[in-house]
Length: 341
Figure 1 (cartoon, rainbow, N blue to C red):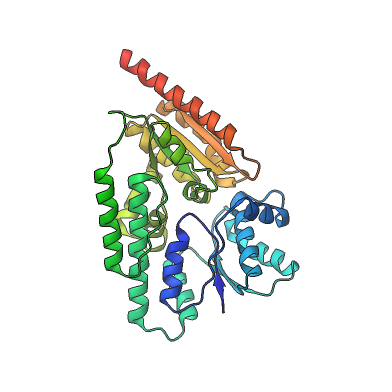
Figure 2: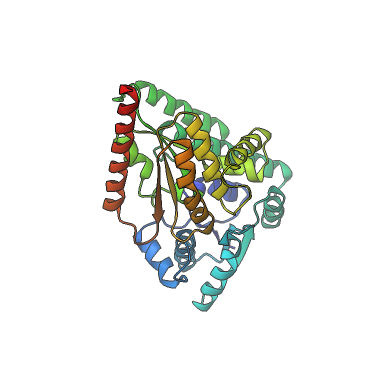
């Protein structure tokens, strides 16, 4: 068995740690490029969303390099993610690939069942140590992302190395001389997790905003999702419930994906004094299209500007940058007007 998986931000680092630590031979897909997107779009249904196309491109590139088993995520609720695996399985079979696909449902029990099947004779101690190391890397990557909003892979083979990597990162930050205004504009990023987490997909959105002098806050990182929806960590779950309550005046029920969180976090960040919100999502994403149509009302009532950006294979960087610059100028103008009274 040579196992592969789809890319999503720094997820590959965590998955490589899990699979290699459990003696599973793994083939990480090549880094995502325009070629990956073109391959996926070529064989995808026209109305499929960007994650579907990119995942399919990942699978085709990996299968062409010898992989014979795909592990991917399942889903539940109105989001079309729930049937991605079955549709992709049929497309790949029609292209002549011989493989097995395993869809993991979004609950820790099913994750554990799948890994038990894959690992076979691994001891419980080895499984525990491997999951602990993967969890440490996950937390380290999230911490680095929250601190810098620049991608930084953590190459470590044990817990001590992870700790040392973080210490080195913090030491490097302490030596930086930051050219930053005393009170920069603050923008919250809400929306669909795949677009939020992957710099190739969102065209390095947070880095571009950072170079404009904006302090960015991403509302969802990979560890947030794991702790909230897989592990059901109490603290993370309580934060999630708070966000759902914040959404209630505008959206009173689950619509799939991260749609209701986009509304809830917009309300939460508005109350925390953020200057603006950027809502990112794949073109044709049903939950986020619902959120997009609710956000104008929330924006008016909460008095916070919201910019929605849809991403697909036609999205151009120049057009996106122009919209970002105009949005940042608007926020700066509003800030000046408030100061002037």
